[in-house]
Image (cartoon, rainbow, N blue to C red):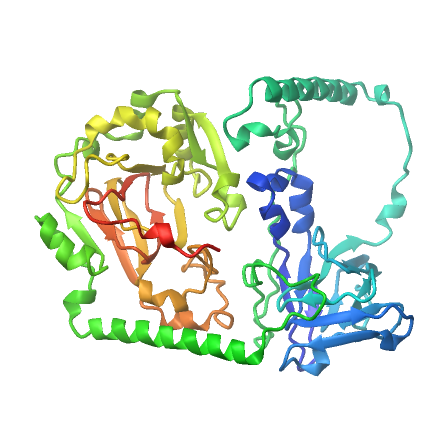
Length: 559
């Protein structure tokens, strides 16, 4: 079936499949809110229309249409600014588009689910879009007077999804006692007993990991006996983007809310707007920084040996310090692990035999979350090691499960049995450090580490398999839209849906593409941006315990 949005000349609505994430859910302890599958599905159960610019609005409490004041940001197109038409503290957005659904289908139109906004509430409507030649409006009503409400640019103003007209009238609602359905009653009683036992276990034997703190029956579509009850059980929706091939003037809306400010000024008593002089000074300071970084990088280009990522062997510690570590340039070291038994021994079968069924922690459920790197705690999982290996060796395992350095502290004791198969890089690393044997990464073909930079210098030692690494100098930070901690607005530089209209500087990016072979070590300098993808079953160890200072993270500016 098709959902068509017909565009009059000049119309260019910003529409996207609604993301499942919400900022308030991210901020719950251990991202607890995402354990509620109905919330996740509702969040993503439609398309969002975004406001193209920021504005502030206030209602004075009176009933007339003139009782609302609306202040758009400078430069906003007046034809797209919301208006006050009805009075009663209602503001109206004109939606650019005539929507067409299949015969017998309407559009439900309202506010984006689970996005509360202080001082104003979205109104909902049902529109017969299988025949209507008219546009429709989206309306919001103030809930209290004298309160400035702020909408950010690219904030959702409307949420819509198709519903079958009159289907609801065919339902016959009724009450019946639970024992009228013995099978359901039995399953409910079993779940209730399991729930009571679970709660008692939480009190008497508190779990060690977040994944152990909740029951997953509904999330997995199973009853208390772990029997599957649903053929079409959903844990994630995959809505399609609107096809813009026939309307190239329509900009691509961002996939998630990462372009919004970290904290919206909603709820302030006055409109949130920085003084123009302060904004100008900040922009000038950033422009000067970008100029300096780009100029220094261009100067390095004058000597190709300073910018190419070289493969070298037999490098002394002093030469490594002078040529690479101290000057913040990457290099690939060859032959340094030639005598490590791990290079030939560490097959999946060998690893399973060495560690067996001892429990390990890993990152799981990553395929359900585009920002899995940013929200690592929400993806902590636990399993017997041999079961984990079996899981990642299944065909198409992809990026869903990955044992990473983030799990190192929890796994240190279990993985210690493998240390005898490793050697030592004493001329580069401090063997007396707290973690002399590094931090291990184990995953299948297709595992990905999203685009980011580290706060330390790192060795990436590839023990099993190969990895493709895309990296960019620290000087490219302004082209990579760093928005939160060490992450970019762009998770994957290979994503063909990247909107270059929103991220135009990506076209200027100075990017290196490295194939890291088994037995090679890549030195990843502090601040260098990189993303990593495993090309087959892969085991990697990373080291940060260099003989030289590597503690710049201690004074990293806090968010």
